[in-house]
Image (cartoon, rainbow over all chains, first blue to last red; front, side):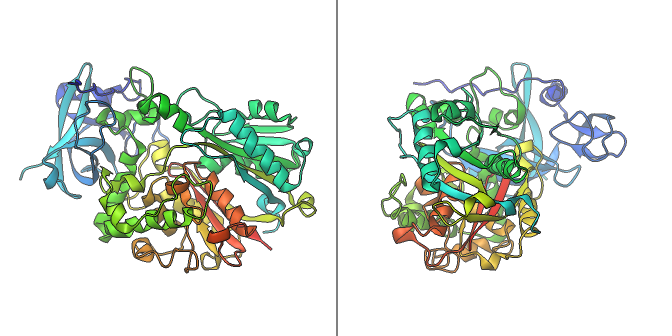
Length: 136
Length: 394
């Protein structure tokens, strides 16, 4: 019996650490420009829209729609649990504001456009944002 | 438009080493094989070559994706370069070619050999995990930090997102996508250097296992060991050489999207490829309808649809229907596509197989896969960065 491989976690870097640790407060945070109001992800040292350096993490609703997904069937590493859903979520705050995730839902139920809400999964000092179906 | 740099540069030679899965020859030996053959094909001697370039350079990481540097290739070949470049940046795999064009056009070099060598089959033979995105370090950083923690360990996982979005938006079918793999395999049967040459039917495709839905095993290109090389020459030096010069009628390039981590659009198209195509067609009198054949990047089959639409070969949402059944994209069809088998059947040279095949067609060396009277060929390259060329023989 091969034990499942540990997830390879993100290194906490100065610009990105807030994203991977915001789950400690049970809220999702995305970088936003204080001057023009544009959200951007991945975070950058300045606003790619207006070049302002007044960018900072801000709490978002944690809601969005599934822009696309794939069901991964290939056990890339020995013991990797498959199938699983890898997806890209368009957050409610802004068109084309995307984050990647695993979709925590029955595979047959996953569809492009489905409404999702964030849920965190802690590994060591990282809170991975995951998304599950938003129930009405 | 005559003063554009690419109008001053021609492809004068092209060659490939043997291709192995794995090869018994080292990456440096394979590189020498391809470069020496390409130089001889041009009718040149090694001492005529004054520039050398490659994508991406050399790295001990990446599972054989970057096994040979241009300086060690120059050393083993006996080239004394006045101009040398390794580039993994910018417009994907074509960056060394575009940079060589500018070097030649401005007089820094006269004849440049550009090579792409891969040793991914050897690396995979040592460790099946060597080509995964996770890398050797304890934690993952950079662009991969956004995907690898979710066990998206292969590029197929991100490109499957594009395929699923395209399927959902346009109602495309698996059988339509399968037409790409089936067409490539039919062409590869006539390419002695292709890694997969056995017959493939649409039923075989549909029976192949799903790796990352909707993409199957047969939607993926294959890791190989080998090297492809081309010789670029100034047009003034090209006329007297062995082959009819292949003119670079136009080139286009762009970055964006997955490469830089910013996602644009709705995942049914590659906006960077659209920008590269716009630049391309602004630099030539030719039009998409005048292309005799096309070598379109196929790291995964879905790339072909997105590139075809970006390049204006078909309208958005139409690629799936255009390729259906395969007749239009076969040799003798309206737009013969990936005539050497592409990367799906001929192996992952990161687009250099496509460029080589364009030369095969324009020099009428295609044998059973020759497109009759081919004088123009469109080439596109890349899924993370984007490069494209119109190649033309007078």
